[in-house]
Image (cartoon, rainbow, N blue to C red):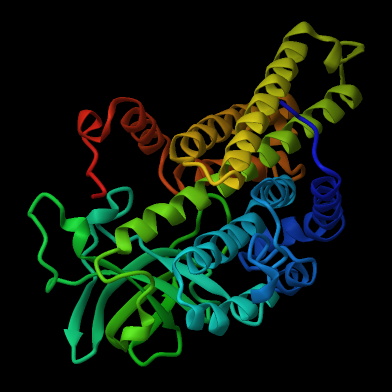
Length: 395
């Protein structure tokens, strides 16, 4: 068993770390306060080969393995979770779904544009009454000739106001499905956002964290799509969605490792510099214990993430492993951020130091791509069997 990176993986890590340190981190605070995506970083990620990292070079991608892609997510999480979130949706949920389920024509039409940032993707699953319970979506896809007409509302759609391509999940009531298996009616559609009837607006209110992300409300009103818009098979949308969430959870987990690492580094630096009662605060045992726990948990989370990514590269099932990585990494990063704010004292409670932003951002990572509660359900389902855990079967 090897724990070191290959030279190619190390090169990707170094490139991602340099980008995060030199280009992302310096604008993170301003983007957070402005509540706006730093759009210039999107094209830059395209130039660096990150936007479609694991996509085959034949479609404009970099052909990265999943360990390398996790290293990119980790570096971005260290600098700005909003930028990592953009990439996770654009490159992970949309790009990898196209790679895994798209026809040759669909791949040729969209993947090269997604790889450069010429086109931006968004993933439209969440609805006002359907989040963790993806099978409960109410958006409909009604047959109309050889196509469908889509109607419904999606919320919390990351990249939604910027996107050129939306991966939309809707229910086709014309597909026969047992009452206890409503997910068999769900279809996935590739919808250009300039299609008539496709409306979008900014989510109301102000988010606790990820303020530099673009979160949208999507209104679908009589959106007509053809048969060539279906991603996968009609009625196979739930499988597409669940596969996408496996990709997304790995990205969230890796980003959480980056958040935890950033909080650890900031706390160590502050503990060395800050003095109280004639000593540096890092000399107090209680501070030392907090730092030791942070370091151990960040490293454990990192190993869970890298193992899940490695298994994905071997072509092996990773649902349990990605859920474990997501659960542990986000919970560990939350504890690290909480301790970091406490160690910084009053400074940690203000925007004078990045730990305040990391604390706000990590709460979102506990929720995105399935809450910590949902991850426990997924893990238990994998251990006990789907029926024992009360989750819907996929068959």
